[in-house]
Length: 511
Ligand SMILES: [Zn+2]
Image (tube, rainbow, N blue to C red; front, side, top):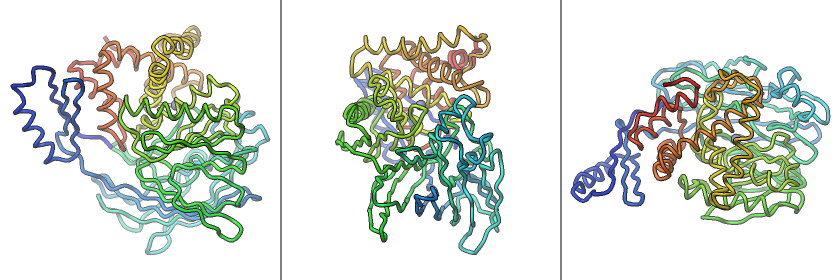
């Protein structure tokens, strides 16, 4: 959803005689909600909306499932309260049903060279069967469509008017494949990433129905409220996006009930081998789920220090808990709201483990709280997350160490790629489909993207650069931002025209 244009008034030094103007603005601030004020070392930023955005109601998911260990399936139902946030009436609602792409080797979301790693125990299909879709008036017709059958289209019996909400009941069964990815199971963990029907985003461009690409993190969603109950055998521990509300005996099993408000997805990871370490920092409960004692402490400390550093640098992490879970996951790390999956094989490589945990923790700000379309504008969260990781090193270990990591992880990564390609393949801002492979995606979106943020910081100076990040975080908290929105904030804070600079870095064209 696009946010209306906003104006900014910047006051620096000698503000005495302008105090009355500021006071007047402050009164307006009290009158209109959603206005942010920044006061930092004597300079003032007052940022406000031309049209104050409405407080939007959020979609709500109430999911109740049972895991059947022997069959490796989960079965259950989902109640979705869907809010039509557009100005148009709609006659259908679309959902992503990602598990279906795991049905065949051809549609599984891995590149050819990744297949052996993803299915190290051999391929077996995973999928989701939609058993029924109902509203309070009865059955609704629906279609399963799209590449890999990963879209569910629900036809409404009558139009859902702008601003109105509709309650849907979806019954489904999910078969969990033996895949060491976001969704699947290995020898130690069951990874529930992108596992339930999640509403597609309806924005100015229409419904966003992109398939599950093997490159990047091909997701785009809206902040919603969740209540999820999962019944598991008693020997399992479940880490999730939610706060544990209760854990109850249901015959021989346990039902874990979680709640999570204002999050853009809901993931879980379950294991019968998890051990847990936890600690409180700035009122946030940080948990490390692990298998071997080696590096468990390091994982907890990396997450804890990262949260502390990013709280200071960008604005406070708004939730009560954050979990880092070792998992059967071959792709390094994966971010979900309040929960990140970390490849358990990394726990023997302390340096890289720390890097990956900090990166996934930074995603809590860029992806989690401030969202974006990760299919069309992946750089927006990924490049900024990679640069945020460097800020952790700068803060914790000093500028020299940060520079070493920057050279090794960023500059080297980019140069290696650059030596092998033509210049016109250098744009960072591309649709995921336009990247040839994950290597190219990594070199450009992670490495060159982080180099761009380093350049931007030098260009704006530290104070302005961090103000940009703080304003961006505050302004787009719980929303989806676009590249254009980010540029606008940079221009407002710096009072400069930066379009050509952004163009040059992001698309390779510009003056
Ligand atoms: Zn990332």
